[in-house]
Image (cartoon, rainbow, N blue to C red; front, top):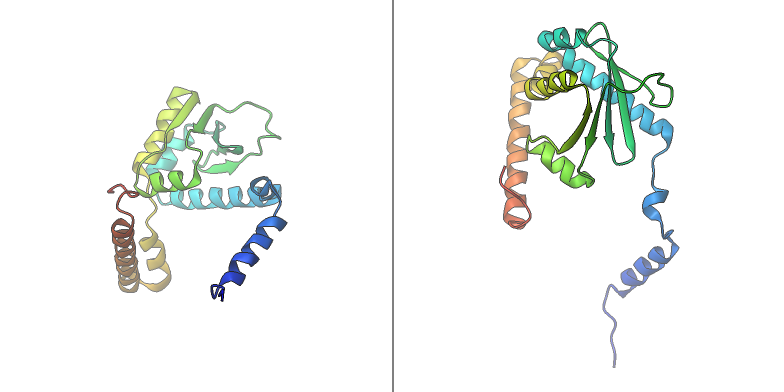
Length: 191
């Protein structure tokens, strides 16, 4: 008498689903151009929000007004221009009338490895093409400008509650990091 495992139907369902998926699933999942534009627009708004809290950074970027920075990762291109106010303005690469003054090409192709590098506070490996002085200014921004989410939260709910929320979030992240280190000791490098 042969008995089937209790969840054999799950394996059959997975095989059926796998047969129905297109063979080029990764290419089929490319986001729409309008979605990419909206994400880039939100990135510029966020970066400008952080820059607004740093007068020294805005002063440095005011000297770079009109210069164009382009960041390339895989097949994605993010291009922005420095404004007279020391902020960023999104520029569509296809509509730009001039070449970028500085091009930063991110060498890491894996999104997970890139997120891991950034989460550890490291800079990803990049290839720099263009103006050296502008590259030095952008490097200064990476080294000295930080977003303080606790300050933004304090504006909404007050200092003491914001500090308590931030402290609890840090504890949760530390617990998650410890959990991952114990479950996957060979896969995680110490931070």
